[in-house]
Image (tube, rainbow, N blue to C red; front, side):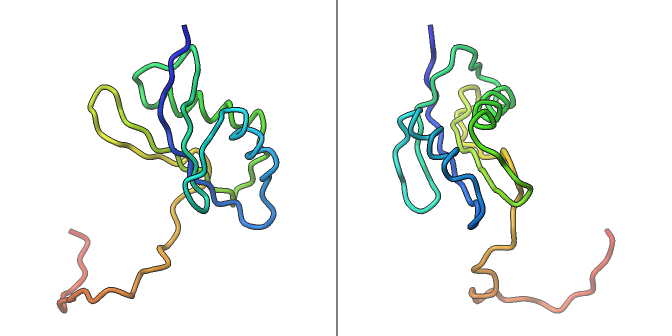
Length: 117
């Protein structure tokens, strides 16, 4: 029996990304658009376990069957961990960048000396 897992996929490919492959994968999994670069999927698979690492590996391998990913392509998976009840997120491809909003907030900074402690 196949189990379903609610996941969100955030994607940021730039102008040269394999959108055709990604959109084919999303369409095949009946994904729902949630805004620029975000989709909700009820991922169905017979081998999903409660283990987050296994989930990431299964979805990553499934996506890579459709999508040619480059180093600059970013895919971020968000899911609820069945064991802890916590929402988790992890990059399938790529990594975090500097936030575009850094420097806009009014955060009080104290003068201090940097140390290696």
